[in-house]
Image (cartoon, rainbow, N blue to C red):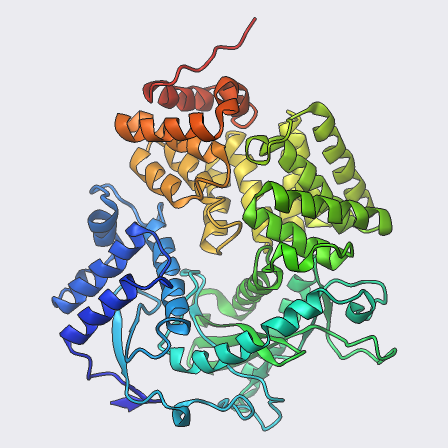
Length: 593
């Protein structure tokens, strides 16, 4: 059977094995050894006729070395790793594998791979960017490319292509790459060129178009209208963006209107609701993000399903460190307006380097002086000072009371300017937490989460503070959800999952999560792994981590007790952590009388 240029029966075992080797040896396949082993295992087992055995439990044992007590409901490590594998396969086929004949995908809903063959990859089989085909649409496509992909459900939030559409995405990738220079020029343009309907408000603006529905009944139309309204309601909670529902009136040549358009559609297939969504950069009609969402209306009913899907779409579009905030610090440095500084901040948090920190701090300081009534820039500047306090070993700063005081004053000022700004409340939560006022910290965190539960950074940070304050069950649930939604910075919240597993006594899961974290992001991440390895009795591997800390962050060694106590509120949690470090061979200084 052949569909859209893809033959689903012609792939031989030899061809699939060769394709697997090609992927694993490619420089564009950038995942660590455990994920490469994951791919090799599921492909090999499928070729051997054992695809029915590819369950989370089996993979956890074969790939991650887990024991018979593994519980996929409590520990989503296999699902998370599968999501990363799906995204990396997508990246590979958009780059080095763009001309490959064999397509390997891992569809949503399981872990068994599918092997497809592109019968013809010539230009005749590619959809024209100027005239894309969209089922159910009228002829007013305005030149956008439909790259809808990666089916996402509430139960399986990983992102990746749900079916082999790489040949179509490749055409879109060419247009996106060709537009990259235009985007950088746009980011570096003057304030006047980026003004929105608010005049002086230069945050990125999104116009939310009504989601379309096939003309096959009033129910789909009602759902599409409700989905659109729910998405708007959830998007406006993100203070980093401006949301509009109609094209603004022209106020002059320097007012280009919204930078992005959020488009989508809704269709019903029995009780199954499928919604597609895409974010289009209006300057060049490039689709910079697209996704499919599935839900069964029988499970939760229409209103709740609408709310869940709208929240997932809003989070994917506007979440911190997402597609709208991925840029290079060098490309935006020197433009102290709010939009450039927001981008600079998120770029810095991804890089976590001294240079990026200084660039973001300088930008935000100038922006605060220029726009003192902007709650967002005050909140982000507060977070910059908080990072100087909590990430001092990485940023080579001093954890002084004065630094923490400045951070708290800025956070309080940001909250006074906008009491519902989730980012401001997040900053206040962290300032109070590191100021040893856990009650005030959790109060601010609860307010931040209530203000915008779809903000993955708010949810993840609130989950960390709950956990470290001793509320491990509630906190770890939020951290797990944040990780499942690809909260950034990459590898940051995985260390929280490691602590969650460690404190419940599952040291094997703790080691797995710790190694999935970004160990170079902050020396404290290495310290967490050191304690876990000590508890496991892995002396040689613990020595490797201890050597790294002594070499790269020697100032941490005499301050370990202070740093741990400032983060873990309960004595029993501190003792468990210190016991692991002592078992690893490092003596922790006792508190002085």
